[in-house]
Amino acid sequence: MVFWLTAIGGVLLVAAGMVVALLRKQDDATVAPMDSDLQVYRDQLKEVERDIARGVLSEEDGARVRVEVSRRILDADKAIQSATAAPGAPKGLTYGALAFTLAVLVGGSLWIYTKIGQPNYPDLPLHKRIETAEEVRKTRPDQAAAEARIPPQPEITNEISPMVAQLREVVKERPDDLQGFTLLAGAEASLGNFAAAYKAQEQVIRLKGAGATAQDHTMMAETMILAAAGYVSPQAEDALNRALQIDPKQPTARFYAGLMFQQVGRPDLAFRLWRDLLAEGPEDAPWIAPIRADIEQLAAWAGVEYTPPAPTTRGPSASDMAAAAEMSPEDRREMIQGMVDGLAERLGTEGGTPAEWAQLINALGQLGQTQRAAAIWAEAQEVFAATPEAVETIRRAAQRVGVAE
Image 1 (tube, rainbow, N blue to C red):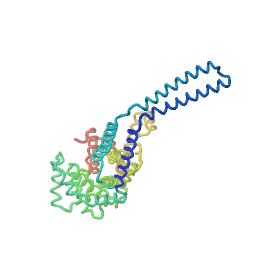
Image 2 (image 1 turned 135 degrees about the vertical axis):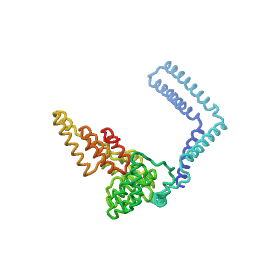
Image 3 (image 1 turned 90 degrees about the horizontal axis):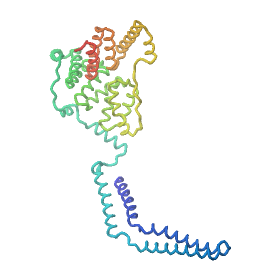
Image 4 (image 1 turned 135 degrees about the horizontal axis):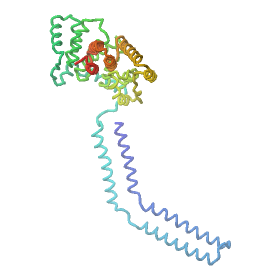
């Protein structure tokens, strides 16, 4: 109601201004300057009489000036009479133009609003919007309903399909085989069979019990989300919550939690999660690109003024490059080997991004250490089994080195 009262008041103010402009007598603006000129000429006549009385002007000169000024007074008076006597615009035409303009103004405004506005949407205070978002969150479709809306896709097969088929048979015969279910979950995810992957991962978590890690629950949530084409169902949210209870800093779980809040209408909570992830980096982490693509719009929805930090890159410093340029080939190779060994040690203990694993495989290939590159490629497939995009990034590096088909 407040919106409509405000809108109607604005239209009336604009219409009132137009009415005044259209109905104002045009001759008023013309006559006013002429009246001013007439008064000036009259003042000039009085000044001539004073100049003659003081002896500044002679009688002859004064007479000539009086004649000239009097002529100008007569001309100005005629002009005023003509202006006031001239007919204005016909009243019918004026009123017709006014009615047409108002009709266009009001009708056009209503038409535009019905097209791009929300005529029946009430004004929602903050607490009401939060209540609405919570209701959406509680009543949104579950995992099965989300998957049912997706057209069936043919099962993806490639060179590792026989192994997957064998694993499927093994776990049927041995339902308590933790290693079998672990390998099957990763293999199904690599094939893009995400529904089968999260069902296998569900068994992994069941068998691990209290020993299930934050990564285990995150993989469960991620494969469920991928199976639902990016939709975060209540079941996927439960898996994310379990992961974050174990490790509140788990980045992949935080990213998908932010996606869930965005989907249910809580951009404020989504923004906080994604802002922190973007600040923490690293820049080549798989969640950074989608965050950068959406976070400014997300901040606007949350009512926050925000400028994303500039991208950062990791690599040798300028001093490292300068030092390498001055080394002998043997010393340079030794320095590169040291950097490669340091990267391998860090990835093995702390983990890293797909780009860093690919960088390590490329470096080992350049050093001629193909067996070690093959071992890193095999390890990377296990580490990123739940993330096909990451595996593909590393696979390209392994193919360049010649340790992958």
